[in-house]
Image 1: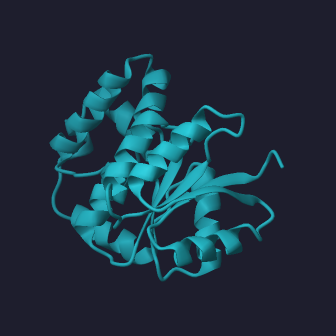
Image 2: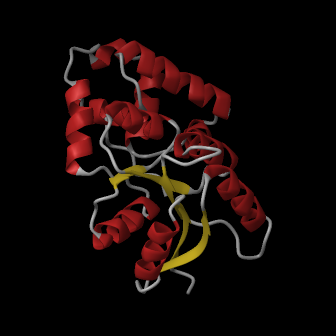
Image 3: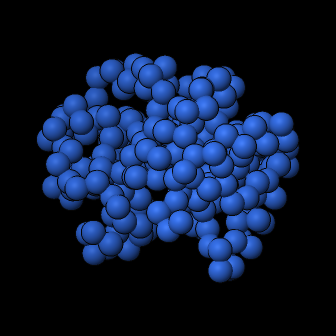
Length: 222
C-alpha cells in the first residue's frame, strides 16, 4: 500500500529482529522491508535499496551496540547519505552521553529496549510524520541538562533566530538550507554556531531551548 510506513531493522540479535518484524508486519500501516545484523551491513543493504525499484525505507530502527560499526556511527553515515530516512536509536540503557551522541548523529528519536511493542509502532508513526520521539525518562535527562543558565534569545542574530526556529520545527540542515536559500554547509555552520553560543550540545537541546523562548512558530518539516 502506498501509505504504508516502510521500516528497516538493524540489530545484532536475530531473535530481537524476528520478534520486531513479526509484530510490526501485523500492523496495517507498517511494512518491514529489510534487516541487518550490524551497521556495516545495514549501510550496504540500504545502498542496494536506494538503487532498486523498492526504494529506501521511511524509518530505520537502529540498535546502538553492534559489532563492526556501531549504531551511532552508522546513523551519522546513514543520515549523511540519505537525509530523508528517519532513524530511531534503540538501546538497553539510558545514558545521557549515548542519547546526546545518537541525536547529534542525526537520530530523530530514541527508544529503550524495554518499550512495549505498541509503543515502538507508535514511535515509528510519530517519526515518519516528522516529529521527534523521546521517552519521558530520556526527555527528563535532556531537560535537566538544559536547565543551567544559558544566553538570552537576544544574543542570537536575526538569521540565527530563523535557523533555531527551523531546528525546533524538525527541519534537517538540508531543509533549512532550502528554506533560507543558502548552502547546506552554511546551514550546518549556523546550527553549530548557535549550539556553541547557547552552550548546548545537540539539536534536541536547541529545540527545547527554542520552545522555552517562544521560537517555535514555523510549520513543521514535511
